[in-house]
Length: 153
View 1 (cartoon, rainbow, N blue to C red):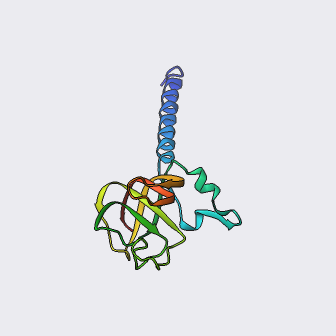
View 2: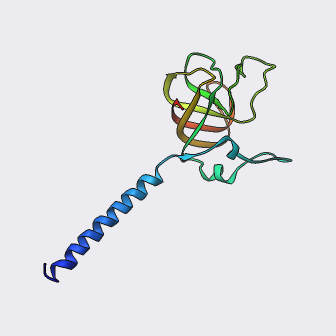
View 3: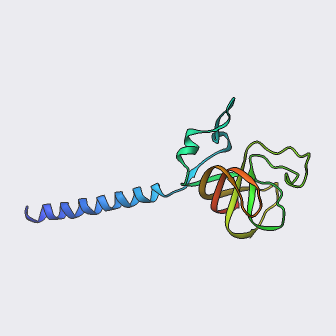
């Protein structure tokens, strides 16, 4: 191989390598960030619940989390409530039920059959943060994962 051909080969190699690096960076950037119930809030102070800095930074981004479905209102739905620990009673159906502090409302991409409240699930979707009232149900939420999908963990 002559010296004149070597830089061309090196240049082609570097261009290809840079393309692979950019492709890998793009894939990593679009992977879901894992969140946990412990990381939702930074404090429960005088001003009430304050979202963690990390949660605020992930607003609008793809996230994933594991938890338990609260007992659903009906067997198939396009939403459910995700809790840190399994709960035995439907919080909406029992006025004296203890509503969990750590909850996230999950809005599925489409209606799906829901699983038993004792089964752990892994949820992925886009994070929404801040007070919002569901126009169909009237339920108020602070943290939501929308366009979500789930599977048993």
